[in-house]
Length: 453
Image (cartoon, helix red, strand yellow):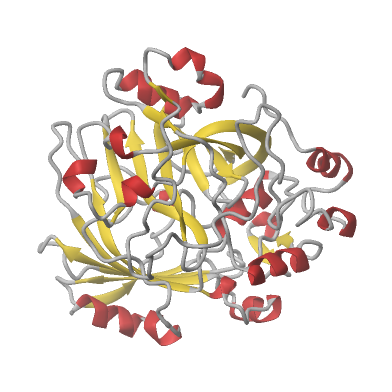
């Protein structure tokens, strides 16, 4: 991969430290100084095309209230230029191979409108404080398949290897609990689609203000997640429950499903890795959800460095409740008219399937936003080494939390020339981050109640 550079501190750690080493107090002291509180470079780039981080969005736009679809604070920004097949060669060095493949697959329709870069990612102060507190203590265990001495914050704000970087994505801050409504669609080659509706609840145990490394390790739970299908009628009532563990060797992910036909809750050990995602038409795997989730144990992880790259960001236009799903979904890819791309620095992490392990992806390359640890682009290769899929997360700042999280994830299958758009909520109610959830909401009995509503 061209023009990748490691931060000087990361180079030093790779050279002088073991793969699972902790950072020094001197390195941690950089957080909130030349680095942001979670480890990004505070300064802009030399060209002036990436500005300095000044705290992100600290005040919601006038008139906003929780429960609204989030209005665009950058609505007055003008498009700087549009990347399309005619000028693709001028921008290749700031695109991933998967993004380039989309231009080549859809030369007449796929475009990227590029806007000024807005480093809008912001998070609560207690999350920043926790990051600094655990930065010298957090460590990977079980060969990198578990996390210890960490709670609330980013465990490895100055990562020295790929496993640390991917764990930063897995435990990044997305609030304490939330309910989500909306769904997904997988248009056919003609553009026809069936909307699959979801109701979801999630409780982030790791991010709770009272979380401690000790109680997280004792319970061994990162988060709990429950999902029920609301439409179409033939699928309605199908439900899924997941307890995600912190040490995934001691206790692998626990999952249960409720099937309306059988009216029974069953353990579901196969809800992991490359099992097909819920009602996904085979267009994404279970561990594609959230761009990557679950145990990293099937891959060797390498931190390739950093690069400047055009990624979907501040996607408020795509998020708007003034759009219908039919305005977004079109044959081949979503409507580029409603997308926004910006130049940001990303960490590049390459995962290569271990010898003797099985997965439909032989290699995965993740491009992780330095300001949020959100994976924004993933290039996914088959076991022959050919590009198979490319995924992009269209993110924004949710003011009321605050957090930077995706509003829509789009997974493109290059072979079938189809895609699945996950997170469609333009015609539904907005996420509720104020909801109070507890462990009783995430039991097999609660899953059965959810399924028969």
